[in-house]
Length: 327
Image (cartoon, rainbow, N blue to C red; front, side):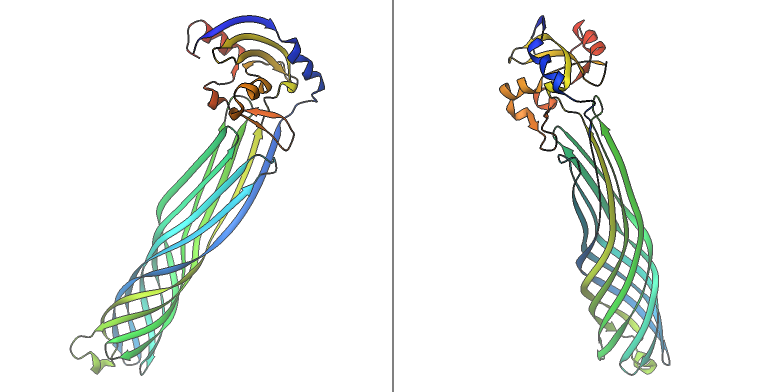
């Protein structure tokens, strides 16, 4: 981009700065929490041994679900929004089982290993700045529960089951700062513990002589469907933004004019002696209105420098760039 250099005192712009108050840094904060409910569906297989009225064995299952805890938050600054999602989309277990049977009815308890994928993602955005962070991992934990089975036919088992699953916690934290004090910060946590209730049906592949042991012994496999609830998640957010409004600037000097008519100015904010090089929001609003937003919270204008292909600089950076480095 060609730049036509000029040194002109911007008196007509600086006159607005006298109406600005002390330091104008707009801060925002927010927090939220959520849990989820979802369907569950999957398959299972296991093996039972029977000794009189006692039935013991092992069982494994694998289920799909969409246990998504979602949070949408508007921060107190009025310009920043945040969105966080914690999701468990599948899990499995490997459990031992111990039960007591009376005729066709089996009551049992179970417990063991649980595993599953836990996703956590969070994003924040304000005009001109976005922060996205995510993490995903297969977690291991524990499961405990129990159920009731009914031997409907000699080779068909129907039943209901309850599980309490705890896969542990996942966390994320991130921040982004652009030149000056404008920043976004977020942190989120998801504790992937949830409860599951399912109804299932199984086919019992009884070995020879199993009915002599009472009818429950042997290999079985089937499917289950039901619902889940839990997966508690929480998040906290903070933001700091600095307007680009000419009313908040002083000692304004035009130092360059871009081919598209925008001026580059040297200036100080009314609360600081640091010298910056950037654009004037009111001028950008006339030539590139798509790159300017008016904050409904404080009525000051903010510029999205990325839309202009520019970046805000301190004066020493500008001097170095003007000696040959590309801006």
